[in-house]
Structure formats: structure tokens, C-alpha cells
Length: 273
Image (cartoon, rainbow, N blue to C red; front, side):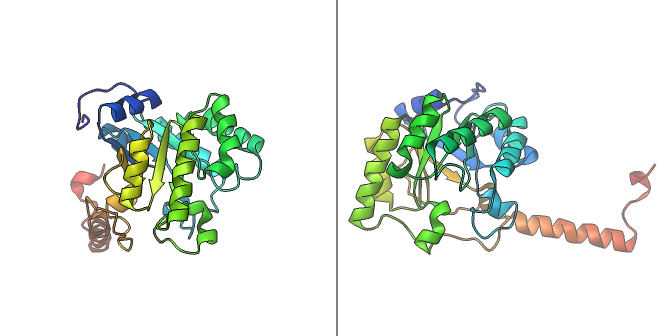
């Protein structure tokens, strides 16, 4: 399969994402956490694959992203990279691996890059972690920022409601976005903020801005694969468009498999040696 925009199979790089923004080409981004899904997502022509710390929820069943460890993120990242030929692979830095000390953050980022062979890392936060961002970029590691709703801070918020609706928080977000660009970030994710604010940030920044629940005025979109494929049937936020109903497909297939075993229909004569 080839990408929607073109048959260009060259490896996507941070510079190519910047070029896409300059010519007004929207950037497609989706999560993957394992080899099989990563191959499918890459073959479909996705520009960016995010190995998100949402693996904590989707793969491990945790309530928040906080419990997932650096070793686990490296494992998921390594699995994804093995299945990818074209997409840019970005791995999330998990909670606790960069917040306390810039040099701990640098060590964590180096481990992700060396052990997973990913193309870049992503971390949450603005001004509070700007020295960490600068240090990681100075080491030659591309960094994607993340502002708005930051799931690693969910215990501070106490709710998953839309962020930056008030002027004070919106002003800080705009300031943080510029600081991250000035520090050298190659891109920025904005999560669950008003569409007008996200559009303003995207228009003010030269780097690509990717939205999730941030409207259509940004430079690209990202969703969790299991959500947009309809595998998590109970998760239905406003920003989510489901492109399939795999929950029904998979549970139906499993039910048929069980029935065929119970009735002795599987395996038949053609399915044995």
C-alpha cells in the first residue's frame, strides 16, 4: 500500500515534517505499541508513529499513564521500530524519567534512542522542563513537545476536561509553545484545548503542531490506534472518530472460533495433516 498523498517511500525525518508544514500538507500520526500493528500502520503510509505512554492504559490496563516504566517504553519502542520502514518513530518519555533532574532526563533519552533505535522522543511540559529539553537536544536527540492536557499530570488536574479555556492558562500555553520552539523542538503536540487557541499556536510557530482534541486548524492529527479502530468500545470522547468497529469484528470472530471448537467443526479434514 502507498500513502494517500503520494507514493513517496523515503524515510520520514524531522526535516521532512517541517517541509510538510511549509507546503501546507497535513501530517498523519497514530500510536503503535507492537511489531504487528506498527507494520500495518507504516504500510498504510502514516507519517509519524507515536509509541505513547498510553501503552500504560491500552496495553497494560492501568488507569493512568503514570505506572509505565522506562524499560517498558524501550521494549515497546524497540518492537515498533522493527516493524517500520518509512514513518518517523517517536517514543514518549514516561513519568519520573525527566521531571526531577535534567541530567536524569538526558540519560533517559539516551537510553531510549540507543536501545529502541527510535527517531525521536516526546515529553510533556513547557517552561518548567526547558533546561531538560535543551540538554537532550544538545546531545543530538530530536524532541517533540506536548502541551495542553498532559496525562502525566492528571493527578494535579483531577479531571480530563479541556485545558486552557481561561486566559491565564492559555497565555502560559502560548508562551510555553514558543519556548519549546526556541529550545529546538522539531514539533509539538497539543491535547484537548480549544480549537481557536490551537490554531493560533500553529499559525505562530514554524514547527509542526499536531493536535488531539485540538481542532482542525493545526498541522496534523494524532489518535490512539485502538481507539480509532473501535477496539475500545467504551471510550467515546468528542474528538474521537472511529474508522472501524473492531470490537464487534473481533468478539464475533472469537465467538465463532469457540463455537467451531465446541461443535467439532474446527479443525476439518483440510485443516489437519
